[in-house]
Amino acid sequence: MQGNESLAERFSRLAQETPDRRRVDLELRTLDVILATVLVLVSLPLTIPIALANLITSGRPVFYRGQRVGRGGRVFTMRKFRTLRPGAESRLGHHLGSALVEATEAEVTPLGRWLRATQLDEIPQFWNVLKGDMSLVGPRPIRPRFFEELAAELPAYWQRLVVRPGLTGFAQVRRGYETSMVEKLAHDLEWIADRSVRLYLRTLGATAWRIVRQSLRG
Image 1 (cartoon, rainbow, N blue to C red):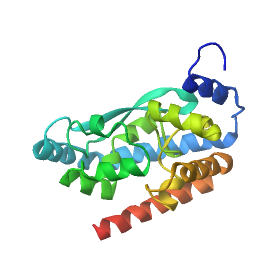
Image 2 (cartoon, helix red, strand yellow):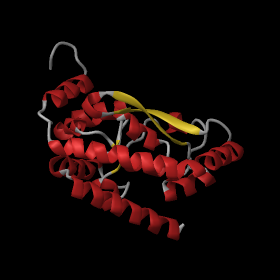
Image 3 (cartoon, rainbow, N blue to C red):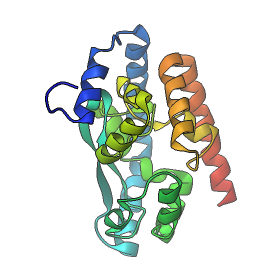
Image 4 (cartoon, rainbow, N blue to C red):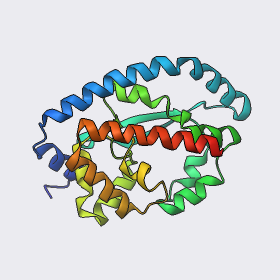
């Protein structure tokens, strides 16, 4: 470790030093821009009604804004429609993994539960994709503090910084949100190693099918 750099700074430097000039990354970024543009336009008729419903049923803020670690260790602001009770993040801040999933359940608003089941709460993240903060497919973005903790426990965790975080990923479509952090990392590393246009499209297709099933069950 050089000087007094933090773990996040160290892993950011390692990610930036890792050769990552594969042509597939340009192809995936092109698909991100095209598909995110289409999704923004298609979702526009839903954006205002959802925002108003959120405001009426649970007040402000309408959107959730959180700091997340992106590609190369750059921290960005991720946006979603708020699905939890106001102030929930401060009450949930010390939880991680399965404990976070369990504690979050008690904080979800009635509208938020429906938004999560249909994943309509993710609509604002299409703008994160257009800005280049995120991809449609990749490891789920994580808070800086949790990144530091997990990187200290799991030596390979820094490799997530090689790609943009995603709206969906292998861990989500394969095992769900209750999967352990070690299992999630294994899926993330598989995506990073094998990422391709075909795998990207298959993951999006699996995500769409999962949303349909969740919506029908809900």
